[in-house]
Structures are given as structure tokens and as C-alpha cells.
Image (cartoon, rainbow, N blue to C red; front, side, top):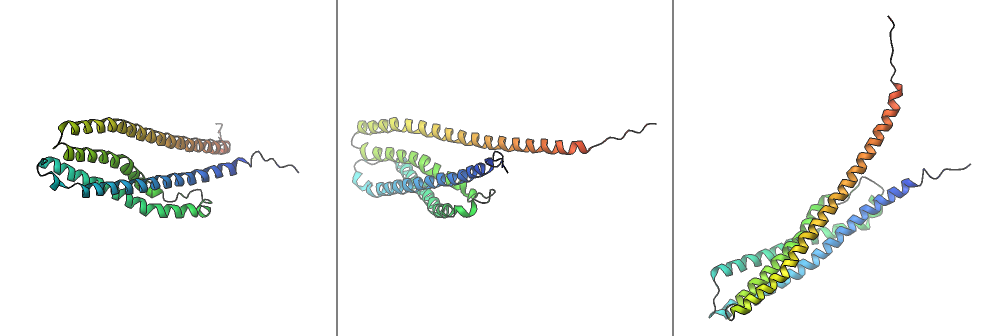
Length: 224
């Protein structure tokens, strides 16, 4: 007896592909959280050291304006607070994500299971805040520190430092905006592809059911 394996083989491969895709998404989110953890811990530590080391008492003869000090205080608080928030999110979500990845053999058998899908928004927020907004605030923090420490002694040196940071910051902003835009467009394309696949499957099932039910409909003509 010969068994036709052409109609049986595609189903396991599709299931394995779906399982691998779900596991790949979890590993991708895990790498994001690990980068957030390292970046936020490093930059928040640098910001706290800069706050401690900046002694305004050493610049009594060259006092900065109140507006500049207020801006420095606000940016410093935002920088530390944002990185600590991203660090908190990564420290809370990362252990749960690692636990789910270790238990992949349990939930992979269920095709409808999407573990920790409700936490995707928090992972994206932590990643954008840490790698985007946090780095941008760090550059602004450097500008303010250079101006406070150097402008009282040499305006030219302070302006040169600001121009240099602007030259570094402009490519940073352009790359960040372009990168996040491309990532968002790729995700939209993937969701559109999934929706088109679901739509084609629904249409195929609809055509199949219509082909089955249409022959059962009979018409009776009454001759008068």
C-alpha cells in the first residue's frame, strides 16, 4: 500500500514555522530588554555622577543664570528618572520572559497561545525611552554642563563645545528617526501580510462551503 505524503508534509512544517516565529519574537524582545537594562543602568550612573561632581560653589566668580540652572536641574531629573523607569520595566519583565522561553515546550503545542503578548507595549516603551529619548537627554545634559563649567572662563570654548555636540547630535537624531520609522514600517508590513493571509484563508473556506451547499439547493417548478 502506497501512502501519498505530498498532502501530509506541509502541515507539520507550517506548525513548526509558526512555533519558531513565536519563539523568535520572544527572543527578540529578550534582546531588547537586555540592551535597555545595560544602557539605562550605564547612562543613569553617568548622570548621577555628573550631578554629584558638578559643584556650583566652585564657580562663585562666574555665576550662571537662574534659567540655566533650572534647565540643568529639570534635564538631570528627567534623564535619571526616564532611565530608572526603563530599568524598572526591564528588570520586572525580563525574568518573566526568560521563564516563558525556558518553558517553550509547554505552550508551543497550542497554536492560539501568545505568551506575554500584553507586555509588548511596555517593552516597546522601555526600548524607545532608553535608546531614543534617554540618549537625546544625555546630549542635552552634556551641553548644559559644558556651558555651566566653561562659559564663565571662555565663551569661545563653550560655543565650540556646543557646536561640536550639535554636529554629533544632528546625525544622531536623523539616524534615530529614520531607524524607528523603518522599524515601524516593517512591523506594519508584517501585520498587513498576516491579515492578507488570514483573509485569503477565510475566502478559501468560504468558497469551499459555498461549493458544498450550493448543489443541495433545488428548485421546484409547478406547471399550471
